[in-house]
Length: 447
Image (cartoon, rainbow, N blue to C red; front, side, top):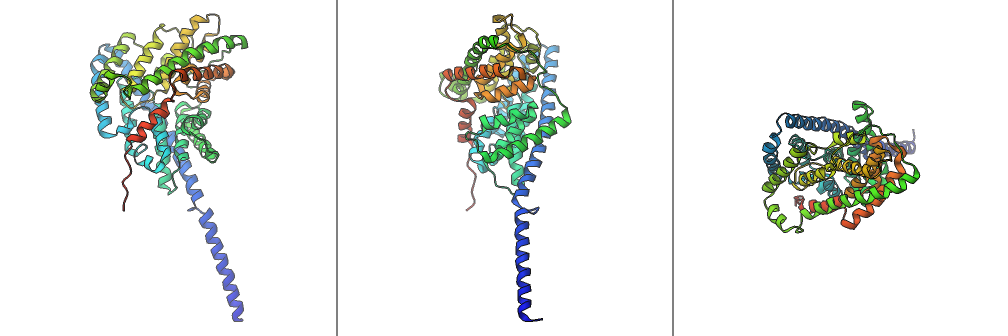
């Protein structure tokens, strides 16, 4: 065989080999695209499983506390204040970045993804968050598990990407947080809306697929294990256009101002807004104990303000009556818990406060469908606190199957957002996120 033919054949073989190697590098099992898809799939499945476990343990802790409080009415007065102090001390000593809701931490982490995984979304931080949130509910704290679920889910998604050697971007935390919302409430659409409206200051089109995939997978895992359920039960009442034009603005103004006041007090508690607060803030353990004493006192007197408030909100939506002061009492218990620095979210307590406001509105509109009026109060207060109207509307509509009320709910949410802005110019989660970003230590670099 001629030498030229050998060289030609060898050249074709070399080109083919290089082409195959290039294709394998770009599209093979070790390619970045497949490692990224594996990280999304594995992370979302784990988010769904952890969210379900977290929900079961949190609900069990809350039920155990309520059972104990019914049996020994004086027990919370004895256990809750020192319990708050102990949890605050543990948080400060073990994982200071685990305090509070968890959503501000995810917002701060998304601004510097690599640094965020070392501190704000580290495994240590979220493990402490997991345990101490459950402990907070066991002490009767007015907290929810949804905010902590967002921080835990963002950490899981971040570590899944790091394990697969995929570069971390802000979209990874946003997708994880959205999946956490979807799994916590069984509300896939709310997860997507939350990612767009709250977690992402500037939503990037390229993260759409990542968010959608994470939400879908986590939601399917949650749905497959816990079954198809509506968080607050189905509510089929609707409002006529005339009734909605009257009730929605009233609910929006009242709920929005109340929610804006909560945000203003929350943000002010961490600053020099209140002179006595500066002295107390310098002693976080003592301050947490004082907050626990207030929560115990309000809960013992009322018997209705413990924990997430889910059962009371569910009963109000179904038509049960609560005392007219319930909304104000739950507001006070939730504020005291939130400023104490304990790990725990404000989603569920805010919906409960909103249900109390909605119950007050029922007396103003006695001839209107009562369940629909309650939902207007819920949506208005929740929007006033989180300042995310679209997320609030979708969460409430999905958790109550009240799709026939979408337009009245949206109208109430938009009015509430405007009303809340009058009292608190800054959005709560974004204001808190700057404090966590400032408190997050820099990553040690090797020279």
